[in-house]
Length: 108
Length: 108
Length: 108
Length: 108
Image (cartoon, rainbow over all chains, first blue to last red; front, top):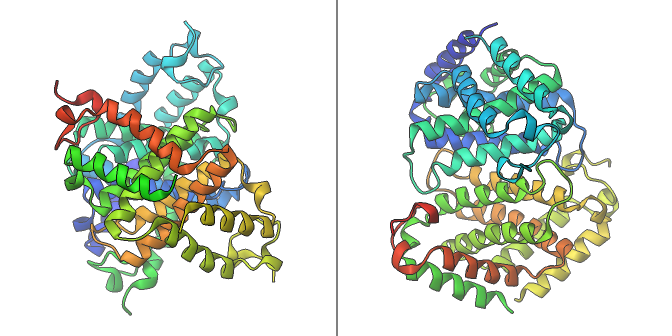
């Protein structure tokens, strides 16, 4: 199923409830971090977590990401691909392979 | 462009750098909240923010969401749609319309 | 050194820069989570982290906590002690000993 | 009441429950951001929030900050004061007065 179906389903969900009034970019950004922390809570004391619970919390994060993308008028797939090009340039394969340091701490 | 293109681009990006070893679900959950907070930082002192900067930070959040979905073996669109059904049931239109309370604080 | 010295130092720091105008409770709450995520970033890919770096990031979190307490007119030590009583009641020693579950998932 | 009383109360609380085993610095860092997001949730859709609820959530953040400071063997007041000196140098009064930009975006 393509993302367009997701966008449409979310738009209808929000419109039916008249919730667009609450969805300022700032409120959506707050919501994304709140949901991201609930996702992290699955791993608060363990490196393992219940897969279904994790998927539900991940879905909440992505739902708000769709709503923010919609407010910004950007395509969620496209901004990921655009940013990937930036990240590729910051982390060249020959310097970053097998390393987890930030780009400004990679060996030359 | 469909999400499959995004998934493939991200898989190649990760494989080329041999970064899969770092991408445990727990580490990806940490990464999602870290990036979500950078997104929120755009709105730390203001309700307005630079749209391009916001899109870049949002892309970082969604990138890690794709990587976690891949690790979990779930489809990001599908889990959003599945969770939407749960949320619809918790927030019936007639009780939730125009209200921002949590479901357990909605008036009957 | 007692917390009163910290509060005074922070008040002077803020007043000199005329930053009180930005320190709404909401903005301080955003700031606390932003700094908390920077603290977490020390552990993004590793369970070990540089102790000095961690202390600096922790200090940023606590700084904003002091500023929020000041705005709320509460004593940071007192609210921790008050909340501790609530938590003790939710996690009785005999049921919670050696367990990391949330209180509503503890065995009877 | 001085922070020493808080530290002692928290140490006893943890020891009685044998929870020290869960309190790695990484787990405490995760816990701080999780609680910080719960604090932010008070302001998810509003700039106003219930003061008592906010104080309780703030207390949770600070509780984990105390536990992490204890693990690191640092004094929470001292690291705040130490970091304040660093911040003062980054934000000189004459350049930062009345401005909310980050230090690297302040006008000369």
